[in-house]
Image 1 (spheres, rainbow, N blue to C red):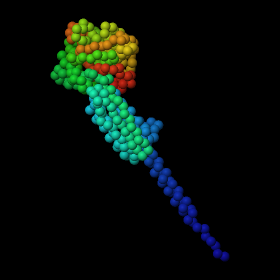
Image 2: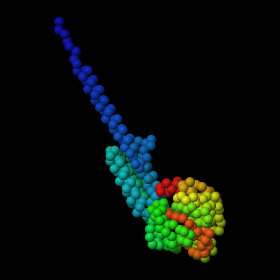
Image 3: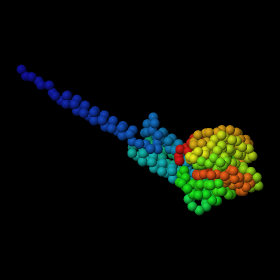
Length: 342
């Protein structure tokens, strides 16, 4: 009788199939781990699939908006930051084989204060274009970093040319770079500093342990005025003064530590706020309907007549840094970002 032997090819085939499937599974796991373990730096990947072109595009737009309204203070700085971010995205998509091309236009200004940014994206599945306006009329009008460290000039980083003249003071280590330390006989003044404000934000870093003076960080007046148009005074209990009226906040900053102080005021409803170290510490109402008309800005003294008659009881004793005046009311989110950025 002849016997037919069973072929062994089926078990060998199944074994080969098992090894192929195992290899594919292992490669897939390694690929997924590599995608999710690699740092994404700027892009926020929380609960988002990173191959989604729409998400990446929206992230680019959000980043551009943030740069416009929170960090970049002039067109050149904004263009540089956007190009740097664009290079990062291009490298990011290339390494992940995401077929996508996008463009961020140069910042274009139709006049000295307004302009726009165009952002476009093209992929095999999406074509998206977005344009948003830059309104530079709502911007920083004076920004004195106080980083010169020598001589008697306080440069203005706002591009408005509002340079300050330093009278006395000692250049010293600041919160960021250099700063000015005053002993009560010193100050710096931006003059002329001619602006009309229906809303304003004044911010600065300060450090003092003085308990005797009602020190004045910022005093602003105008020609022919016998008093201040806008004043922040008394770091033992901050007062805010607008066009002849004032409020007391109950907030101090004279404990010998660095503090970020921001005051905002809006004419339309009189809303007046003081933020300390990124947090709203006071809210009230002051001089609704008024217009603040300035001719100068003095840091370190309180003027009882235009550019003169300094009150010795309100001299600033301590160190001040990064003074900025804006012609808009910064949002709580912007103020918090400025505090944590330092």
